[in-house]
Length: 114
Image 1 (cartoon, rainbow, N blue to C red):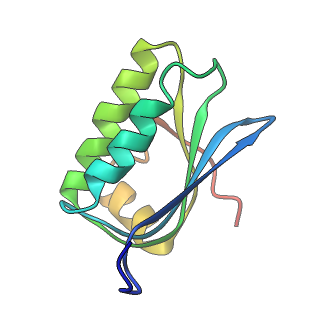
Image 2: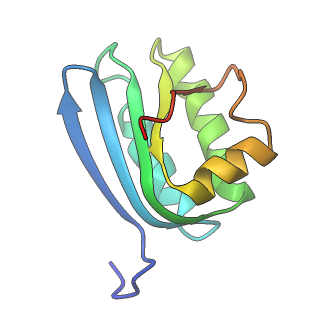
């Protein structure tokens, strides 16, 4: 990992509600493959949803959105659901602008707990 404050940090926690993936830092062209690899590893592990905690994300670009859509479709194909849980204001704004906070076959955006 880089010492940059915006370096991507991913931690995973298995809970009773699902496989929770906590993401901190920048989600962009350089770091989206890391998230894609983590989500691909989660494909066959159980039937519980994979919940993304994006509350620590400081930047998100179109390549990261593409990763969310493609990974969500892959998880759906494996019988699992990708859910977007807690998210930073920046992520919420990008999802709203792109209308990905609305229904999509790739993932579900959960109500913001805040």
